[in-house]
Image 1: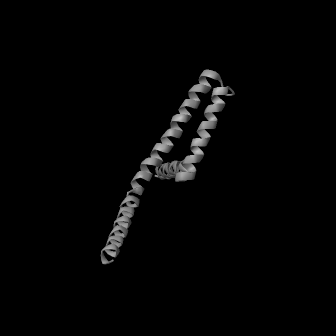
Image 2: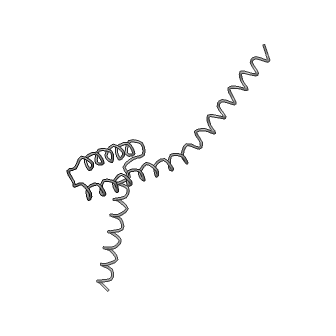
Image 3: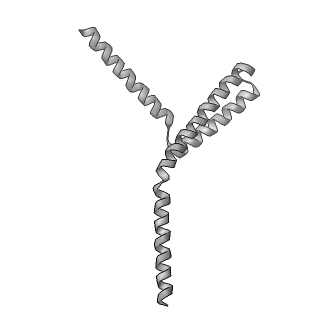
Length: 108
């Protein structure tokens, strides 16, 4: 009886330790997954541009590519947040710095 209780406790501790080790590594995987997800969206955007050039903006191929790209983008946004918003915010911050620099140089 004592042996059974000790084995149950040991297996419970081992399972908890394994769970902590598994979920502790989840943040690194998430960053790689996010980059991969948005890289896929960028590849689909390039494919859309190529098919628009080859077949026209209203072609069957372009419509299909737009649909795939939107699905991939929506999936990434649901899983990881709005990448485009972060990119636009960074671009906007650079514009503000450029404008401030121009004002400073003009006032000298």
